[in-house]
Amino acid sequence: FGYDTGVISGAMILMRSERDNCPRYGGYGLSDFQVEVVVDSTIGGAILGAGIGGWAADLYGRHRVLTISAILFTLGSLMLGLAMNFITLIFGRIIVGIAIGFASHTVPVYLGECAQPQIRGKVLGCFNAFVVFGQILAGILDGAFFYVHNGWRLMLGFGAV
Image (cartoon, rainbow, N blue to C red; front, side):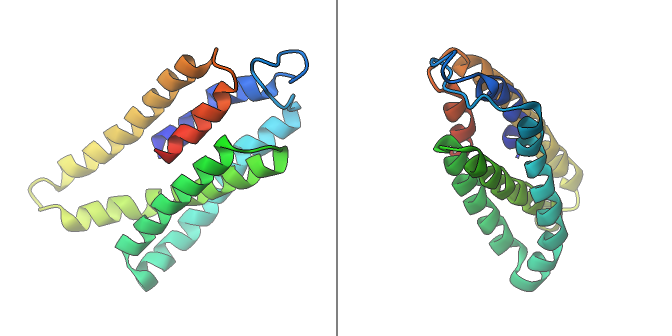
């Protein structure tokens, strides 16, 4: 989920641009308030996902919750990449946020249970390293897609991969 938390910083620059003034970027001309809502909706979704993630993992099992999380990551990213209005952006970010909450709550526990005691710390350390790697990858792709027409769609939609 590192990619999904980091990608918005580059995408927001393009989404703030006016469509008429800068058609190459294809932004929505978002106001400061709208930018805050889009960014913070992910945090709200993550709070919700983390809050119900433990309960869902106990009820349905960690593997099912992780599968649901992966589906939500994919659907939310596709929704963001194809968004045609501000409301769709918010809902896409909420869905991704719920997936982040599920994953951040469930993955460390699942890995800790599956890993042998001798390597448990290394496995969890790798998990944290890959979250950071996702954030680095988001920055790299933000730069790569910055000058591409509707590059923000590619930035956000790439999370589905």
